[in-house]
Image (cartoon, rainbow, N blue to C red; front, side):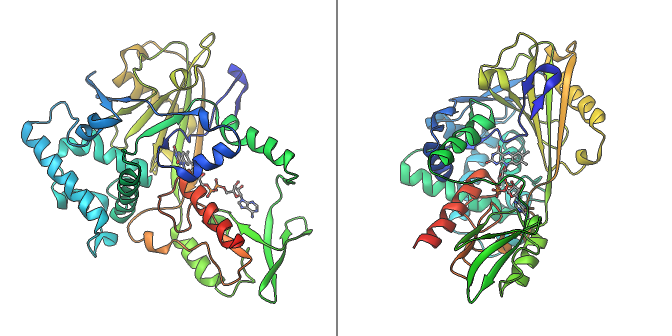
Length: 403
Ligand SMILES: Cc1cc2nc3c(=O)[nH]c(=O)nc-3n(C[C@H](O)[C@H](O)[C@H](O)COP(=O)(O)OP(=O)(O)OC[C@H]3O[C@@H](n4cnc5c(N)ncnc54)[C@H](O)[C@@H]3O)c2cc1C
């Protein structure tokens, strides 16, 4: 996305990459951009009173972080947090029967997670994973991702940590792919809207596009989001079940705000969590630290709000004012900062919804037609709505076609 006013390119918000994103890394390696992802050893949590906590994200320090990061946490709180964390881990691997019927908040209460540990870590983590506030997010979704993390951690003997891209998303995901496609004879048709996947005698024969043309095909990976699948699979016998699940999986909103400021905020880490703020936990991404961006003209800070049910309805100017007010509460340097330019990216259907009851609705990649497979983050994978879920679904879909 260009911001011509400040001659810059901002992104729409995919800033976080977990070290367990095996399939995504396979993709990045194939297009030559794997080295553009880094995993910092530390991150920062910030409170409105100016206090900060440096969070170790790797090694034994990361385990300690799980057990109590809040500066006000007492020894008792830390012990309770340690016990509750172990319970969460155990129940993630051995889920109680009713986990799919309760919210993440109810689960935290049930295992006795103390308030300081929730405020400093767990609510923030759960919101990041399910893109829903803990009062709505499904405990099962969070548990599944925890279980994936624990299993991968045990397999590779290292904790899953989080990192970020050191380049813009075009460079990371697109440019290398276009080169790869060019050298492998792949024809990419942009803005080609598919209307129906045509099936005859139990096999796909082509894809009908919105302009009326048909692209002949002997195999199809249908990788559109759940909100767009309606109509495409009409020729498939089980289409009604897939459409019903896709409808129920619905959507959740995310708002990204890119703020170009006339001065630095004084951040300590590439991404910082603002704790105890608006009730919706915010993250601030410092594109200078992330990308080594030039500050000749402006400093770029990106704020991403997941589960942005309130924010999505507000005018962009109001969102910018609110986000600046938020920054002023946390960063003294923001008091006199001027917004040189701002971009608000509202995504009402950012991802499918991961509220209570949604987890069991995710559909498999396999269909009753062997040459037609489904992919996309909303299909059944080991991950919540993430880029890794999309990449893993694609790997599974292609394996089904090839084997
Ligand atoms: C603001 C934001 C921040 C996020 N942050 C992170 C993050 O930090 N880390 C992370 O791992 N994940 C993040 N996610 C989630 C992640 O981006 C998604 O889970 C992932 O991109 C989903 O990939 P997908 O291929 O399934 O779907 P999409 O990326 O939605 O791709 C589907 C494609 O299908 C196309 N399409 C739709 N209908 C048709 C049709 N009829 N014909 C042809 N094409 C069609 C669409 O144009 C689109 O290009 C974020 C998402 C958002 C919105």
